[in-house]
Length: 252
Ligand code: 3PY
Image 1: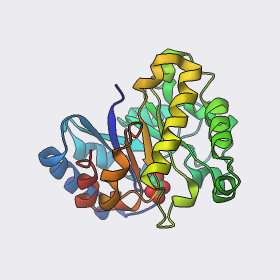
Image 2: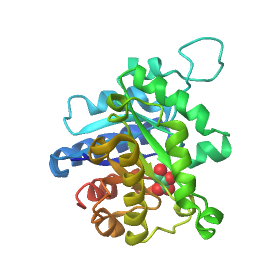
Image 3: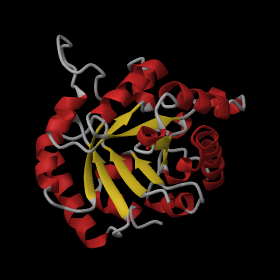
């Protein structure tokens, strides 16, 4: 059985006091309201990691994610952050391959494969993002694109490591545009992804959480999460309001 996961991606938002206030509200509300079988994750900017970790404290169902890391273990890489550094601050998950990183920072499938390895070697769990841009969807190429992203960045992993990966399907045309894939489009693609994972890893694919991302909010989460292969969401804008984020965690 795949775990149910609702992960927030704060992106490059919030200054220190705002971040502390949001994290405190999320933890308090999640303790009271998030169902015990749902894993809630806050994906925060690097600078907020230590504060948010402190606020999460011993909350049992709330976890911490970074939004990126570098693949090298240490050294002369000014401005970069290693997986070992994240681990030393108690980070649990690392979001990798978000379309904004692929588009604005030129992250290739090959670079992402190395980042996936670094995260796993440091005992954290990758949340690996895949998804097609609008022109690819319009040309009916979404399966081809996603299959290439999965195979070039993940399929070198032995099954024991592969089982630790969370996949997030984020159609790029639905990110920050207010457009959402219909529940049917989301389930169709998640089913395809599950089939691709099964073709490579067999039954282990049934235990992989496949999250939907792209303008997911309280008003549409219920319908999207109803899809048999949708195991949760990677939430952008709606993760910046504690009530919305926690409401989404109750949308199964
Ligand atoms: C969005 O929902 O906009 C996202 O990019 C989530 O990662």
